[in-house]
Length: 358
Image (cartoon, rainbow, N blue to C red; front, side, top):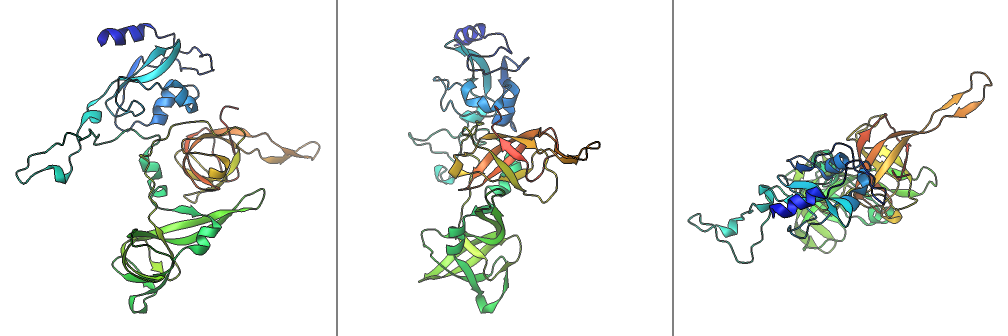
């Protein structure tokens, strides 16, 4: 095995040379790299590639490695030659990829672990994600975007027990709408801002602000009784109740280019400030309808200011400047959430986004 790896390294071309499809490896990248906890796919793509959104063109699924599309802390990755082209792959799995996750049903009364012949090896910490979970967690299991038709048909709270109007964790509530006992956990939302396309004025959707979670206790026709299990703020009559919609970042996606010709704008910044910087979450006016997917990388251009010519007194439109890069991490029908990964300049709502390769 060592001879095979040595031969692969011997075939590596000089760093920094462009490949036939314009895939360019950065200068001075390491021949091999040991992945550490906290690394993301974006970190590694940015380390090795001049254009990190071309990650899937660089990555090679090593057939000698189980689940070769996944990278775990402790893995050793290296540049090798495949069919005359430089590719990046896992050459050795770390301990995290070979650690058994033991569930309670596998331990008997004496504390002895029972492994079934069909038991699979599952990493405790899991494969590294495309982007850091800490920056986007609240937008995966919390707030969401609702299209107009879903908003209109969403079940809503009609009363609290004993007629209470303001409610919180532990309270029982009554709600009206279509429910199913097969889905016992529902999230509670308050309808927030309506979003329109800045150019066409089309209604793109509504912000749904997550208030808490509830469990279905009883269902009679279109009236359901719930108990609020968790609340982050007071819950009120007319707040909406929808099935739990937790989106796990563990769902595998990779840095990638958006569909050809897709461009848009930043609609909103999700922490209520004027200027946008690194690791801010933004809302975009493109989504599933335009073919946008989680992992797509967009360039953000800071829109040029309008100024008055000091000599001729004409109004001039200054050119746009490159502001940074963002990655889409959650999509809806007509909008998406994106995380700012790089910020060369302060950006703001209304700045345009486009394919980073052009």
